[in-house]
Image 1 (cartoon, rainbow, N blue to C red):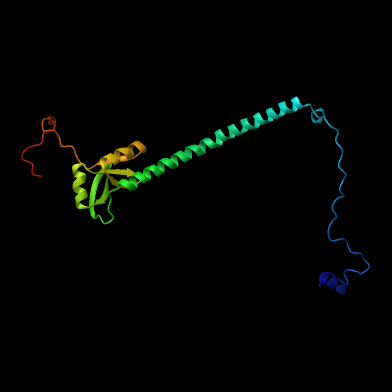
Image 2: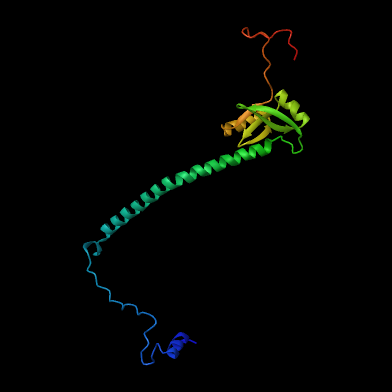
Length: 188
């Protein structure tokens, strides 16, 4: 079966047996003998002092190239590792100081920027939020209940954190808005 196509062509009469077979693989070019190169002045053996000077020069070039490579490429990796370390510190602080409960069912609304957001709390947490014993830290779209001290530490680590305090400042009775006084006969 090695030459089944050739056998078929012989039976049909398209190929004759007298015709010699061509080699299946093309022969590769013959190897040429390597040319002998004449030595240039740089390849001529040198004395020890010149060789040592060239070695020191090559070593300095290698060190300079390594320094340039490390500062250009390594600068980004150093910054990335610093960001990752900071991120780990923030996550550890939140995990250690977080006061959220999984079974909290009472919605607590608070203002974040210009929007009203909601976090679910328990009844004791609601009282602590209104008293100012807990703060809400908004970081990366998640809301965490923290103590005010932990909130300040988080704010020091991540300035992009938004702290919302549930305690509202009572208006000072001495300060009255003269422009828009509240009438006495309004029922709330």
